[in-house]
Image (cartoon, rainbow, N blue to C red; front, side, top):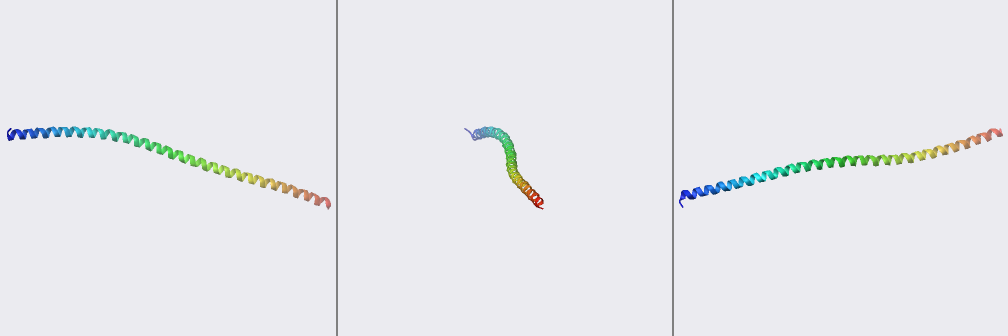
Amino acid sequence: TSPAEKTLLHLQEALDEMDEMTNHWKQGAEFYDSVVTKLLKLQQQVSDISTQLAIERCEYEEDVARSNQEAKDASLAKELAKEHENDSVNSSDDDDDDDETKDTL
């Protein structure tokens, strides 16, 4: 084979390799585009779930705080009711003492 034919053969091989590389590049680009699309969807789903869990956590913390406050309020109400009951009993005892004092006078 002549040098010209060798050069043409090398050029043809280079073109074939270039076509093959271009084909691989296109396939790779399509693959990564599809992966990126799927990752973006997944990222959105994760973001949505994360937001939902954050909302649920806040609601749970509010419920726990409310329950704790209600328990404290109930305890305080019981104490105040006992104090009021004791004050009423003591007040009626004082009234009885006053009545006895008046009777003796």
